[in-house]
Every structure is written in structure tokens, then in C-alpha cells.
Image (cartoon, rainbow, N blue to C red):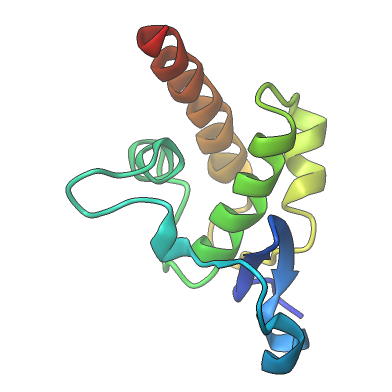
Length: 118
């Protein structure tokens, strides 16, 4: 119930601990490992690193996947939308301020990346 195991199942944030493997049969499953690589971090991963959006790291995969779903649906969320998106993820270390700041920074990084590509 902590949200740490969140994956994207057909693009929707899903707690893998509450989903039987047979329910995912034939469906698209994205884990935190699908976001980026050590030598090419996804802007979300980069932002969490730069803005100290993690401490022990236990909740980080679930936070990243919940926010990845949000940003696909809404590339420019406000603070309230970010807080709502991570509402199902528990963090006992950060107090959430740095997590929200990291997501806001990731929005900037993604916007800059998109503008550079155009």
C-alpha cells in the first residue's frame, strides 16, 4: 500500500503488489528501469537527483512512475496536480517538498528538451 512498487500497466500507474501476473499477461508493463539509463537519465531521474527528491530511495521508483504517468497526460501540471499524482506514494524521509520541487524542475527540463528538438 506504500506505492513503491508502482509500474505503468498500459500507461496507467498500477501498484504491482496488487496486480496478479496473469492480469498483466499480454499488456504493456513499464518499470522504473524503462525511464532512462545510468549514462542517459530521463529528465525525471535527473531532476530527482539534482533537486534531492530522494533520500533512502525506497519510494523513488514508485514516485517516478506515478509522475511519469502524470507528465504524459499533463506536461505542465501545477503544484496541486503533482501533489495529487504522488498521493498514493508514501515517503518517510523527505517530507515531500523536495519531491514536488524535483517534479517541477523535471517539467522545466522536459519543456526545454522539447523546444530544443523543434
